[in-house]
Structures are given as structure tokens and as C-alpha cells.
Length: 112
Image (cartoon, rainbow, N blue to C red; front, side, top):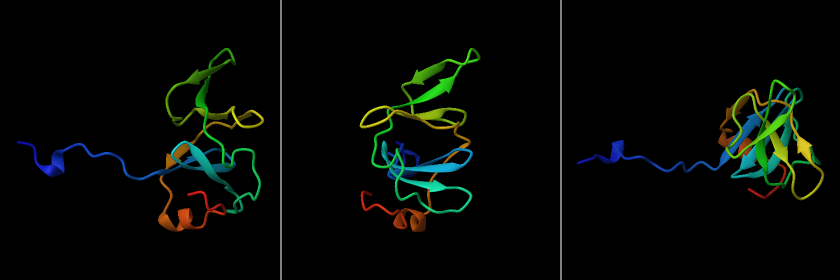
């Protein structure tokens, strides 16, 4: 018999932050809800990624070609937004984090 503490649990947290060299992309599910400048800590009032769905992750190949991935981005991947507006490819992701509750509550858009 398996105890409750050993049973696999579904991830309940919905927010994730993809950190690139200069920018943090804040997501709820697959939707970018906020973008923050790492140097100033300020959220951008207008950014191409805000309120857009993540299309896929992309990985640069040694040849310089971009390889689209069917998985969520990982460290070393770039984020790709292709639908709902201009295409956007971010710089490489240096970390994937969970935002603190106070950060989520400070998002400038009420979409989360």
C-alpha cells in the first residue's frame, strides 16, 4: 500500500519565470503575463511577449540553425513566440525559476 506522502502529485503552481541575460519572462501556464528588466527590476509596460502564448522552445545547433522543440524551454534554450503578432526569439535561457508570491502579485497586468 502506498502512503499519501509517496503518491505522485500534480504540480499545482502555475507560474514560471524564464530568465535570460537581460530579461525575465513571467508565465502563467503557457501565457507570458509579464516581462521584467533584470537590471532595473521594473516590468515593461509594453513588450512583444506579454499576453502571448509560448509557441515552443528553440535550441541553437552548432551549424547556427534553430531547432524547434516540443518541450518547455530548459536552460540553454531560447523561447519562441510565433503566433498572435511578430515573431520573437529570446536570448538563451540561463535559469528557470518559480516566482515568489509577492512578485506574482506585483505583475502589471491582471491576467493572472
